[in-house]
Image 1 (cartoon, rainbow, N blue to C red):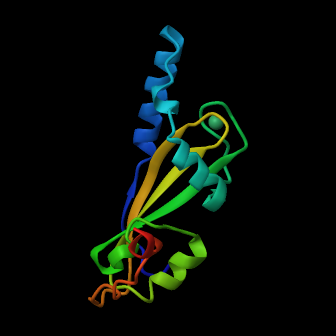
Image 2: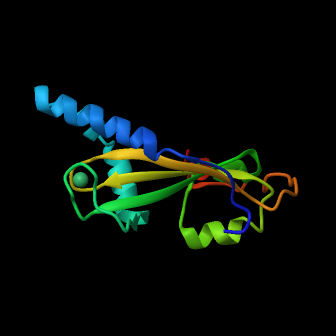
Image 3: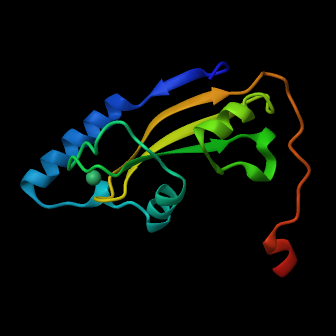
Length: 139
Ligand SMILES: [Zn+2]
């Protein structure tokens, strides 16, 4: 993506978490790092894009990637999950927003933030006008 900047690679932390996890598994079965929120698993199954790599914990095939988008300019849409295709569209529509890439294994529950970066064309815009949601209408 042309506007990608301030990229942070969390793969080192992932390796550290993984080493800690394997250590914990060796001494005592601990599922803390594998405790993916059921909502996160559901989101991954619906919106996730299959990763080219396998799950680093159990070599599972169902390793999915989710792009969470955050930013003031996104208004009420901040926090939504977007596909790579949607991100390419959004970087031309918004000045700046942050993308957090989360890796989720739908088989064993491994989940980790693997990367974060900024996207956007740099033009400051007002957030979109707040549209009413189902919650506004039905409380
Ligand atoms: Zn797995």
